[in-house]
Amino acid sequence: MLILVILTIYTLIYIVKSKRYKSPNTYDHTPKIKMLPNKHYITGDWNSICNNIENANEYHTENIKKYGTHQFSLPFSPIYINLEPNEENLKHILLKNFANYIKDDEQKLIFGELFGNGIFATDNIDWKISRLTMSSFLMKNHTYIKELFQEQILNLVLPVNIVEKVDIQKIFFELTAKSSFQMIFGINVDNEEINKCAEMFDKCQELMFKRYFKPWWKIERYLNIGDEKIINKNIKILDDFCFEHIKNPDGLVKYCIDNELDKMETRDIIMNMLIASRDTTATALTWCIYEIIQNQDLIDKLRTDEEFLISFINETLRLHPPIPSDTKMVVEDDILPDGTRLPAKSIIIYRPYSHGRLLYKDGDKFDTNRKHKSQYYSPIFNAGPRICLGKNLALLQIKLVLSTLINKYDFNGFICENPKWIPGITLRMKDGLYVYINNKFN
Image (cartoon, rainbow, N blue to C red; front, side, top):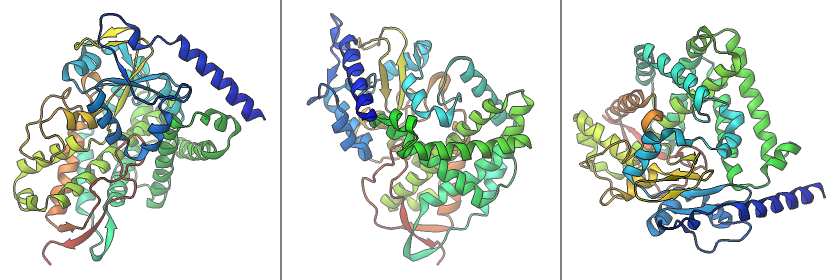
């Protein structure tokens, strides 16, 4: 009975808000922002988006291709605007009018327990402090981090198996988790403990992302049931792990403490560094192996030509950006360079996944001869003041891993052309990437 009453109240609030919201289509003398067809009055586009959750990137890219910039809605949420890829528009948003586009309240609420006030979920002074701390740590410890990763790569021995397939994605996530934990905590954390924390971190991301599509998630959180109970349990264990290491700091943790950050600020930086240093690199490496298997004719050149290897990595990232989409909230009404008006409080979504496919000629085709353009044309590592802090380090890590592995092993196997995606922040394959691994010299 209580749940029914709460749902009724939420529905009434949503209807009232929908009537009060000034749609982008009401502005005069400007191109209208289209709406998706078959929109339900109360649930909006919830049903069609939920039905495409595991191929969301393809779904949204096709809608952008068909309708251009368009809006969609979810129950009890603000209006979302999918932006058509446009270099000048994105430069305006991420650089020229940077202060007018902030992390949206919806995103902060959905991922708040995990990322706190770190760089992925905040703006203003909190963002500046977090970014400055992480940036200065990476610059001062660049050589150490590089040597740490090189050592782990040299010691990496893949399970050679030409009879049964091996999940290479799982191996890459374990590799980057180990290096990330050592960089952050400054010690060789027990592998079992790393795997346990990494599993909880992944589960939190997945379940929190699903909040976008569960209008009742706040009720579950209030009652501490269902997915919200799992999130609360995992967050507590992750927090306890962080706070325990803050008592005896080393690595990035010690750097935070030495710079007079309190334990909550340090904890938030830890969580944000984990997704930045672990998830994105492992995801990129997985897609590189995927493209190697799809393009076996390139393997000899990849083994002998470093510049070609770099082109191969760039092309892989264009087609499979580790973070396929990002959102911003519009602070004040604005007009984009192409004339599109964006109303205050609306949430815009720009999609590196769509940029890579729609702006380039034959964008769905893998082409290592392709000339890659500016960060605003293809925002793989974000752009402007929020450009990825570890971009150069990540590219170096990917190059080191690939050059080491392809000169030691052969990778083969039939794989799905359109793998499903785990709903979340990164482009992680739902079912892993299973491959046959053989020693190169056998």
